[in-house]
Every structure is written in C-alpha cells, then in structure tokens.
Image (cartoon, rainbow, N blue to C red):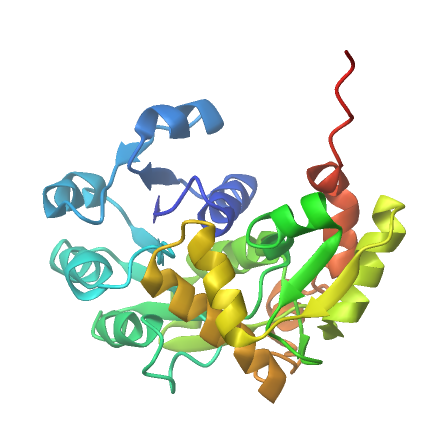
Length: 287
C-alpha cells in the first residue's frame, strides 16, 4: 500500500497501523531520507504532489493508495486529483482518501473536489474524520506552551476529537478487506464531544498547571494564523472549520470507529496522557 503524507500525523499513523496489521506498506513523501530514518524497516519512495513525474514510479506495483491532503495545498485538481487519476490509470486496486466531516456536501472545502475524483475510481473508500486530538500538538501547541491557553473562534461549540491512531487502525481494517468497504464513506469521531473549556480542563489535569480557553473572533483568529506564517488558503480553511464548531458541525459522536474496530475509540484524555511531554514548559535558563 502506498501511503502519502507518511511523515505527518494521519499518514504516519496509517503506516504504523499497516505495519502492525502485517500489510505491506510503502511510505511516500517529498523527503525519502527523512522517511527512511522514521521507518528504517521500510523502503520509502519520493512523491511530490507538485511534480507529476514522481507519480508513476511511486505507484508502481501498489495494491492500494492512502491519500491525505497536505493543509498547504488548496489547488487540489492538478495535485491530489492528478494523483488519483494516475492511480486509476496504473490499476491501483483500492483508493482510501482521508477527507473531513461534511466534505461530501460542503463545496467550500478542497476535500469536496478530491472526493469527486476518488469516486471515479473502480474501488474506493472515503474516511471523514472530525477534529484531530493531534491538533493540540500542532495548531494549538504554541498557545498552550507559551500562554497556557487555547484561543479559537469556536464559541461554546463542542468537538468529538478523534485520535489519528484510530484513523490509522480504520485504514488498516479497510485495506485488509477492501471489498467489504467498497464505495463506503465513513464519518470518524472520538467517543465523546467536548467543548473547549472541557479540553482545557483535560490539559490542566494532566499537565498540573492551569490551562484556559479564550474564545476568539474569527477575524482575529485568521490574523493570528497569518502572523504565524500560514498561507492564506490554509488560514481560510482552518478558520471556517473552527467557526463551524459554533453551529454544532463537529459535536455529533458517531459509532463507526467502534463498529469497525470492535473497541471504543481513544479519548482525548488518553491522547493527552500518552503525549504529555509535548506541552511541557521549557525550564528557565541557568546563568
């Protein structure tokens, strides 16, 4: 199985789950040397979504393709869409795309257009996870470490945060029996919906210092992301998704993870406990 984004949260989790399931896996990314260091037991390949000449060599002999959209890519047609077309032309047996919740009916998110291309393949499955628990270690980490706070335009909205480790396990389940999951779209959530005050409480309990939630205005949040250096397209998508929390777009707890895996999904508290060192405050320098 060829796994794109193998150095990221979702792709990396899929690689680890496929290894654990005994499914042959080929990690793909723009830096094979880095991937080889991360997965020394595997043979990574170079795949650059901006360079179609890398598609055919990476896809050669692959029985399946796991596809994830890098947040910085907004022009999905000549990148992800072209890779999906190349996979279809190469006879790749099954394509699994990690989309987002609601993308099937929301043309404003780039994933909507990728889903249309994936559905043109002979055999496919679309995963639609909600908000990642790993956001706490990526998009939210700097504010947590530097200011002991979460600052998001989510109001009092709730999210059923999903651990990407569970997404990896679902992907491995699909690839073990693609026929059983052909043409399926799965909404994936965690086992409980929390508002941001509750998320802050989870962090407070685990880290032993007070973490607070401060609701932000959408424009102020977008400006914050721009100052952090994010491209405008990524800022727009990230802001829209978080504002959607106010309208309950991520609050529903879906039973699909438990149904597919035969166990409950990991809770946000489990994720924070397993990775608590990520939010440690650096010790003051000694002079």
